[in-house]
Amino acid sequence: MSTFTNERGFFGIFGILLFAVVMIAELQMPTVFRKSRRTWLVLAIAEPLLVLALGSLIVTIFSALNYSVGHEVTGPVYSVPLILIAAHLLNRGLLLFVWQGVLASKTRVVPRIIWNVLNVLVYLAATYAILSFIFDQPMTGLLVSSGVVVGILGLSLQPILGDVIAGIGLTIEQPFVTGDWVELEGGEMGEIINMDWRATEIRTWHNTVHIVPNGKLAGAAIHNYDRADGAYGFWFYLTVSRSVSPELVRRLILEASLKSSLVLDEPSPAIKVWDTEDHPIKYMVFVHCGNYREYFSAKDEILRHCWALFTKAGFNFAASPQDIEFRPGEPHEATEIEVAVLLRQIPLLAPLDETERIQLAHDGVMHSWSPGSAIISENTAGDSMYIILTGMVQIQRLLEDGKILNLARLGTYDYFGEMSLLTGENRSASVIAHTECQVLEIAKSSIEPLFHTRPELVEEIAKLMAERKLKSELLTSESKKISVADRLKNYSEAFATSIRSFFGK
Image 1 (cartoon, one colour):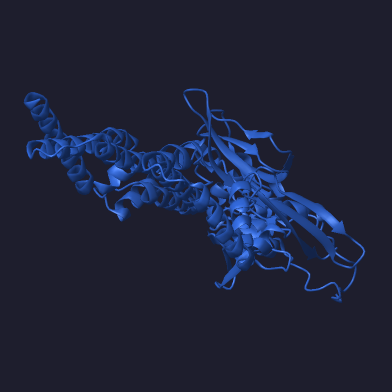
Image 2: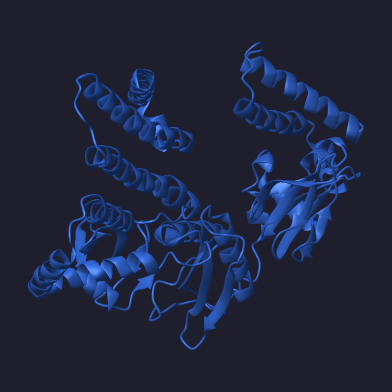
């Protein structure tokens, strides 16, 4: 008996020390221990072990003091803590493995209300087990009296309980979650910021909080703006004078839409002529952005890009459908951008005077390309540059593994191929039409007479090319071994030498 008692005492002391080590580690690293599933497994062993150890130690102490300890004492000493610990571990395990594990995702989080309800139910079940099975207490009378009390409370708290039950239903069904933008039947609109037992809080556009009882939400029609498949579609209307070609307007609006950083490529933007009955033609713009929160910013970007492109093209939005326009002489239908005016927008051609621009516009060749058409191909020879009149193009480069790298998109008034025109270099990248586009091709034979007439153009254009290259390098390079002025001079001289060599000067 003495040996058995000593062994139980040793087991008790060892268990207490082991539990103390685990608790000290949890205090030192609370974040790791609360979130770690491995730690839960350790505690699932350590906590029951502590109960058994304490029970053994208590029995040993009483035995050493010659007190008789029967089953009626040792039973509750072991069983009650073990049941409570089991309930605690079950709730912690549900949290780690189910609520924050299997059922968790990046966009959807299990509401805390469900955690709390199940936690309470688990502890109530543990309490019932202790009273009924450990202490042999009759529970029938308690359950009946509790039912009467619950019935009275239920009648008096019917509205509140209705909201609580509705809240549980909403959290299970999840017609919306925290972070969703919703619109209620009364027109209230805002972002779900919190859902609790009784009510849901919605932050409105005015930065105020609209508190709605869950019972009202459960029976209401709700428009959820964030339950789509990752894209929010919207449309609006623009009006432009009927003197402007609809095809040109559609191209420019499409380009403005694609220039917006918030507008998605897929589903692709749709620009339609909507109404021609009134004097200005009405156009419908239908695009998609990532979510409802980006709607206003996306529309703002599109309208600002439209304004800039329309202004450069020589027209703008119609002020209202009732505008009266006085036009002397025959009406002028602006079907395309005037090429000579366009050339003023090209920085590389800034050294040219008006006469030279008109001559260059006269010699240029117009091309129209459909989406997906290859305008130029990488590593091919060429001696011309292209200026985009309308539409957008995609700059691409073929990688060694055969994949295609999209470098950039260019739109109206952008240009490409200038190195081939001026130095004869092979095309450094492929250019693919992204939308319906119209480009002006300027060939070597068109610009060569200008260099013969005015040799100083070589240095002026070479300097502009050097400035463009230097600007690109300054954005990506941190080298400061050579000053900016020296690099600009070196690049200008190198470009001038290449141009003279290519044009035989």
